[in-house]
Amino acid sequence: MTELELQAFALSIVKLSMVGGVLGAICWSLIVRALMHVADAIQAWEDKRVRIGSARARAHVRSINSALPCRP
Image 1 (tube, rainbow, N blue to C red):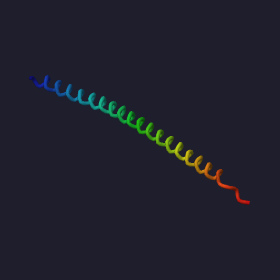
Image 2 (image 1 turned 180 degrees about the vertical axis):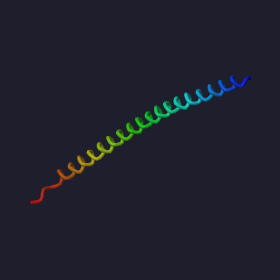
Image 3 (image 1 turned 60 degrees about the horizontal axis):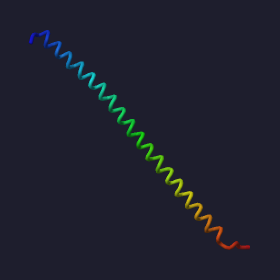
Image 4 (image 1 turned 30 degrees about the horizontal axis):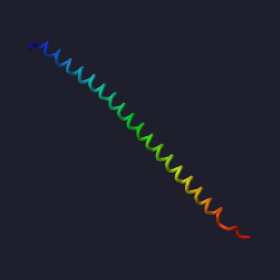
């Protein structure tokens, strides 16, 4: 290989590594976005479950209180 061919080869390696870095960053951001979406969905499901559970508990307490005799 001549000096000029070696420089062209080195330049192509540098360009390929830069493109690979950009593609890697794009893929990483998509992966992180997908993971955050999944985490948000799990949190929303958990919040809904807690709200339903507390509503059931309040309804249960109300039913117990309504069954107690009234005091004058």
